[in-house]
Image (cartoon, rainbow, N blue to C red; front, side, top):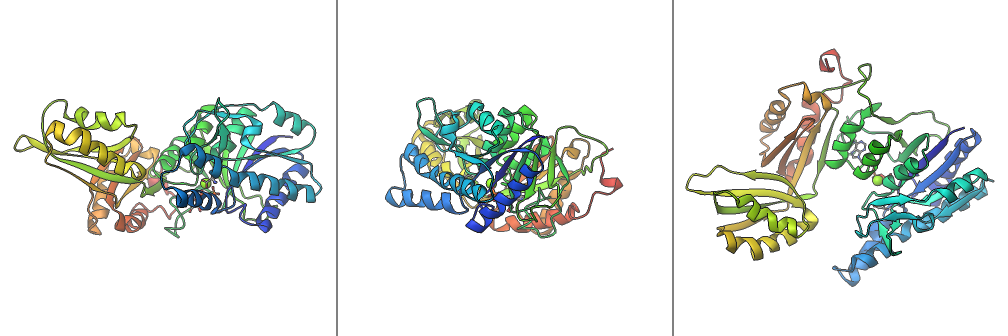
Length: 419
Ligand code: ADP
Ligand code: ASP
Ligand code: MG
């Protein structure tokens, strides 16, 4: 007998019929003799609907109240799933995150899990119950309701699996695993049987929303066996989805590039005509950091006449605030000529641990984009990724041509394998 945590996302819980299917799948695992803890998301579209209602009343609503509202979607689906399980003759009990005592910090809308009290869950499991837990929510030390960021039910699932030392955490969604890129954008995308934890972490952080990044971080920290699977297959399907692995095993399929991620989450800001002298980056980015705005990519151009342009990207949600900070606290101070911004950009990234040992990846990437006449506005690289910023309107084209150029639709051949 093993202990399995299963997480079902919004589409998987999207209607009473889908919930019945989830219950049948859970029943199968119970019949096989496993203990099952199920984490669920709100029905698809529900969290957006709830936040939309709040925004209608006030676009600038109090974050504490937004979390009170956003967390309710999951309270509905835990109850519905418990009812569906009862109907199949199973013992099941549902819990909100607060009832479990999923303790988080107090950063509303992006809270981090600090601890989980798993005693009651263990007791319920020992008594033969399926335990159904609301994803995406917790409470802070003062008892305020918090949420874990969009897509946060993944993190609830993996964190619970870590706390319970579960044998496996299964993330059920509307695709049957992790693909070389989003299969909705590139139909030829190929499913990966395995992907290393490091690559998954990069893909998630660069925009592949199949797993929330914090769930991958948890899996890494606590070595949770994590799998992504489809809830749309037959409930008796033995499909194994994609396994996130921790060891780089030479016998495993291992391409130089594992996948392509993309997102439209960022905006670019350029401070023009700043004096090129020591301390200038600090003068610009210090006030931005003080305003709690994270900066991602940064470029400073060479100077010709003693002045230079300084560009960086921030999350789109922080774009307006960052512009305000620069206008009020930086422009006059440093004597910049102008501050311009562009929130119609996209970031496209190649990810693969094989990049460590292979040169020429970036140049093939740039050549491919050049052939399509896609202008690269910014570049950033690390050991296992190369990212470029392009005009948002070329994002999907860029992903498709790169997918083809790196032959990601083909299983890796000998020459693509790591040495
Ligand atoms: P859930 O509601 O189950 O959490 P999400 O919508 O959050 O589902 O995540 C699943 C979606 O992630 C898929 O429908 C797919 O469009 C998208 N996705 C993005 N990148 C990838 C990828 N590399 N592999 C698989 N799916 C991806
Ligand atoms: N319901 C939340 C969201 O839409 C959490 C999740 O689905 O993981 O972001
Ligand atoms: Mg999700």
